Image 1: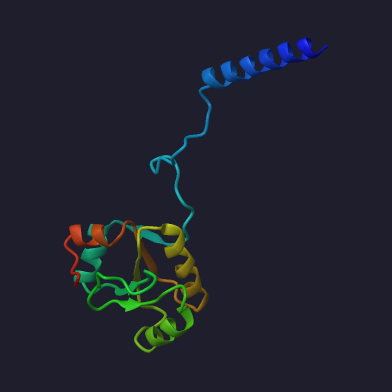
Image 2 (image 1 turned 90 degrees about the horizontal axis):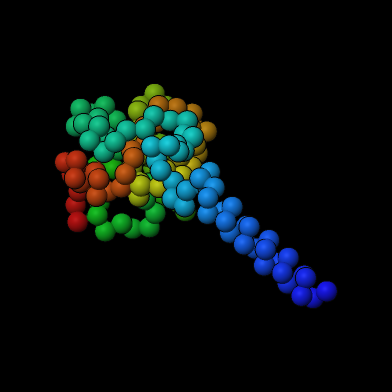
Length: 146
């Protein structure tokens, strides 16, 4: 009885491994951004377009990176997740609901869109999110201070 059970277990294990090996419909271990896109309710721009928007004075720059970053964006208003209400109150004195805000973060669209949603809930709907991080910003010609 135990022998038959062991043989059945080995056969089912072998069949499972074989089926797994020849099945081409597996999920990728890493998301391919050409195929998968985060559902974001705001406009997304690459770093070069973001720098151009700022150079054209078409946006107010908002830095949403957490903590005290070593590299600073001159003229950017900091709005952090951990101190959102206080940071937004400071920004509120300088912006109008119709102003276009450019949100720059650490490249994580989830955290950028989270803060964008919070800003949007306060009546500011003209938001643009930058793809990429500060190194992409700098590589595109954006000004930084270290």
